[in-house]
Image (cartoon, rainbow, N blue to C red; front, side, top):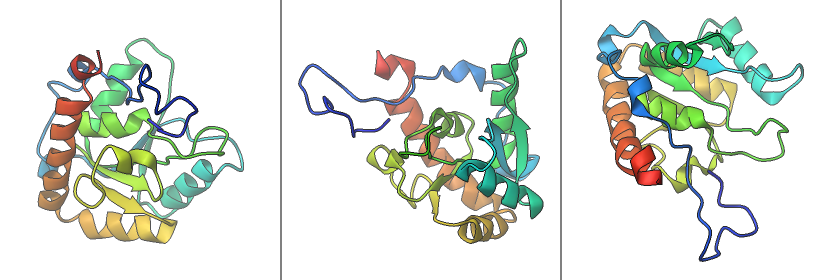
Amino acid sequence: GSRKWPLSEADRCMTLLSPIAAHHFAGHECQHAERQFACGYAGNVGFEGSKRRAILSDLVARHALTIRMRDDENNSYDDYAQFLTKCRMVFNVAWSGTENVKQVKGRVVEAGLAGACLLETAGSPAKDWFSPGVDYLIYGSVAEALHYIEEMKDHPERTQEMADRLRAKVVAEHSPAAFW
């Protein structure tokens, strides 16, 4: 998901996004007006003191974000996917685990497959694959993320429109069939 690696320009190499099977998200889709959560985050919240944890904690404290923690139970991925399909917006933090770089997380593709409007970190390399402001929203601070969440939570038609564009691109260009 990041084109910043030594052989990214070599003829024999390629850089792609995680190929995620859409069937995990099938059967749970619904229109944004019917979705349970205005904005959700699913996955690892990061280590104590991390940027990810700080951002997520701030949004949760302001009742702006619903979190589903990662688990290792059987069928947990399908439960994770189902949670994302209940969110109008899916929040992402693009920092790598070491916080040295920003990367395109699998959550970006998963948000598209879930038919959710992606709220992505400013400076993310997602811009190399999708169109900012067209396919997804960008936040540069907690205040900006809060602004989008508050502005969009009562406008499911707007999140639906953006989510539909992201989903179409993900399915057409980043499916396992396109990857392989």
